[in-house]
Structures are given as C-alpha cells and as structure tokens.
Length: 218
Length: 184
Image: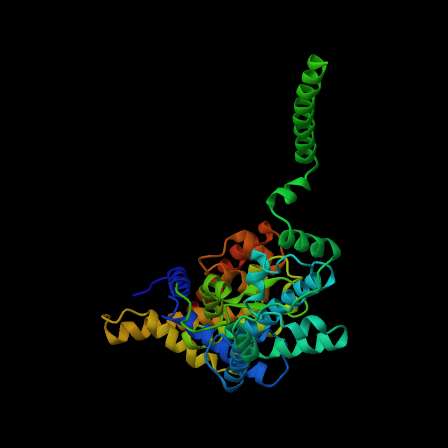
C-alpha cells in the first residue's frame, strides 16, 4: 500500500521513466516515412531525386522510371560497337588520304601497319581514283556497309595496274636486256677506272717490250 | 538496428541544398528518445508512437528548415513536446491516465488495495497536469532518462539552475497539493 504522496509521485515518475520503446517501432516509422515519400512523389509536390525515391518498394512510377533507365543503358550498350566501328572506318579513311596524297609511288603499298588497318575496309582502286565529295560518299557507304567491308576483305587480291616507267627505269631495262654483266659493271665509275688502269698497264707492258726489242735490234 | 529491407528512403537530398540527410540514421538515433518524450505527456504507447512518426514525417516535409537548425536533438524534442501537447488536447486523457495508473499497480495486490493505489496514482497525474506550465514541463522532461539537466534547459530555453529550481518547486508543490487533497 502506498502510504505517502511522495511515494506515489516517485512511483508515477518511475512508471513514466521505465517505459520501453515498442518493438520494431523504428521499422514502422521508416515504413510510414517511405509511404509518405511515395505519396508525395506521386502527387508531384516533391522534387526529390527519382533514383533515391524509387529504390524502395516498387510503385508504378518507379517501375516506369527503371524501365526507361534500363532501356537507355541497353541502347547505349548496343550502339557502342557500331560507333566504335565507325570510328575505325574513319581512321582507315585518313590512312587512305595519306596514301593517296603522296605515298603512291612505285614502292609497294603494303606496309605492315597499313595492311593491318586496311584489313577492316580495304581500299579499292575506284576509291583511290575518286576525289573530294565522291570519295567521301564512297567512304560513307563503306562506313555503313558492314557487308561491303566483309566482301572486300574476302575478295581475291587484284594486281596493281601497270604504271608508266620513268626515263631512268627504261634506260636500266634497256641495259639489262642488251648488254652483259661486264658492261653493266662498267657503269660503276670505280670499277671502270680500275679496268682502264689495268688496260693501260697491259698496253704499256706490251708496247714497252716491243719498243725495247726494236731499240736493241737497231 | 538494421534498417528496413527495401526501404529506399535512407538517403535523400534536401531540396535546394547540397547537403544530405540520413533519415534512417535519424530514426534509429532519435525514435526511442522521441517516443519517451511523447510518452511522458501522453502516457499511451500507441499515441506516443504516432507522435514520434509525426515528427519524422514533419522532418521529411520540412527538410529545408533543418539546414538552419543548430541543435537537431533539442529541435526534435521541442517538436515532439508540442505535438504531444496538441494530441493530448484531442484525445481523452482521463481514460488514458486511468489505464496508465492501473498498469503501475502491482497485479498480485488485493483488489481493494490495488484500487486505492490506482486512485492515488490518478490523483498524482491529475495534480501533475494542474501544475504551472514550466514546472510541469521540467518535471515530465526529467522523467526521460536520456535527457540531462543541461538538455532540458536547452529544450525549455532556460538556464540549468532555473531548471533545477523549477524541478524542486514542481515536486514540492505536487506533494503539498496531494497532501492537502488527502487531508480534505
């Protein structure tokens, strides 16, 4: 039996102090907050970032949002190989320009790096002959034509068209086909000088002996 | 305590500000304290839990205001206190106090003794509500274990010594009134 008012006061205050927090109250609080946030977002009164709101329980707007995000990611993933290929074709086109601008001489075209890059879309003779807009258009067609690139890749190698010979090349050819190796060696000035010196020495030796005999006979 | 599975409200950006507020951490840290503050006024577990939820909903709605809050803990206690007072006006506190008083009485006591004790408790609660506002506030807030005198002083906007004085006066006045009531 509570006898004094002080004891009653102490007991009441102890009762207030000793109250335990209900089990799982925090979860209920957070659940209420989440529901509230979803309701606010659906009503459009709240400009909270979508990705933060929609991480929780799925709603119709949340599903729509994530659907859009997933579609975007997939489209980027699908477009990346095409973009990459187009970039590589662009590199090939710049290689074409380099080759066509000045390096197209009698020397062979197939340097290792160029062969490697032209393996994707090999340059055709018609592309080399084209210039300006036509070449761009042709390259553009090649850029978008995957099948064309493959066809070109697997096509049989064609020999380069015959080019006119220079004057020096023609003289060299004439020498090779008309004179023998000894004459060809004469083209070298050192060899020629050495040969002339030997001839002189031989002449002097022969005619020197003849003149000495004549003198003795006289 | 583990956060709710699938609850994505843990982090959210405060609108118009760069700072972020971790609402889950807030709930984990302060829900117990706010519940006890509300319970000291309402003396009903269900009502106190509702008030604690209301406080967090208000935080959610008025997030930009939080950026100007210096002491979040004190601010939360003040909000809880005011919401609890408002709610107490709307409910029937007599019935709730009666249930609370009965819960304090030992169950193994004889019926007449239990009834007498419950009535004494009810008298204490009635007189407590009749105390001057500042004294009642101090007395009730002092029942919250987590709150020290300094924090009570901050919540009430008074000095620490004033809070101690108010607490002493509240208990003295309450005892005197109860004794006077018993004498009648």
